[in-house]
Amino acid sequence: MVIVGVRVTRGENNGNDRRGIMLQLLGKDSSINVRKVLWTCYELGLPVDQQNWGSGFRSTQEPEFLALNPNGLVPVLIDGDTVLWESNTICRYLVTKEGRQDLLPQDALSRAKVEMWMDWQATDLNNAWRYVFMSRVRQHPDYQDVALLASACDEWNRLMGILENRLVSTGAYVAGAHFTLSDIVIGLSLNRWLMTPFQRPDFPALTDYFSRLKQHPGFLLYGANGMP
Image (cartoon, rainbow, N blue to C red; front, side, top):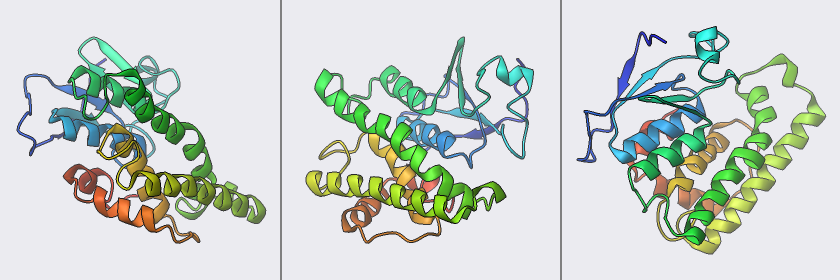
C-alpha cells in the first residue's frame, strides 16, 4: 500500500523523540479514537505520520484500507510490518513497546486496574454517548427521536456518575494517584461529554479532574482542543 498526503504530528517537548522510528497512523484527527493514539504518541515522544482517512477524506471502504482493517474503521497503525487496529489496543501496544510502566504497569493487578477502565470506556461509555453525539453534535436526522434521546442522555450521565464516584475515591486519576493510559482514553471521553450540548449534572470531581488533565500538554493538543 502506498501512503500519500501524510501530515506529520510530533511529540516535541518530551526529550525522547526517536526520529529514526516513524509510525504511520491512518485516520482523521477529528476522530476521538485517532486522538487517543496521537496523545499517546505525544506522551511517548514518538514521531508519527498521520494521514486523514474517513468522512470528508479518503474512504475507509477503499480496498487499500480494508486490506489493513476489514472493519473499515479508523485508526489503523502501521509500525514497519505490523498493522494494528482498535484504538485502545494500539495505545497499549505503543506504551508496552516503549516500556512505559508509569502509563501501563507491568504487574498483573496494577495493569488490570488500568485496563479495566480502558475497556469500560471502549464498551459501556462509548455506547452510551453515541446517540446523543449524533443527535446534538452531528445533527443527524436519524437520531432525533425525543424519547430515545432522553434515554441516551440519562444513560450517558449515569455512567459519568460512575466516573465521578471513582474520582472521588482516588482523589486524582482514574486508576489511582498517578496519570496512566486510562486517563488518556477516558480524558477524551470526558471532553466529549463536556462539549456536547445537553443537560449534565454537576459533578465536582469531574470538574477537578478536567483541570488536572489540562496540566498535560498532550491533552491540550488532542483532548481539550475544541473538538468534541
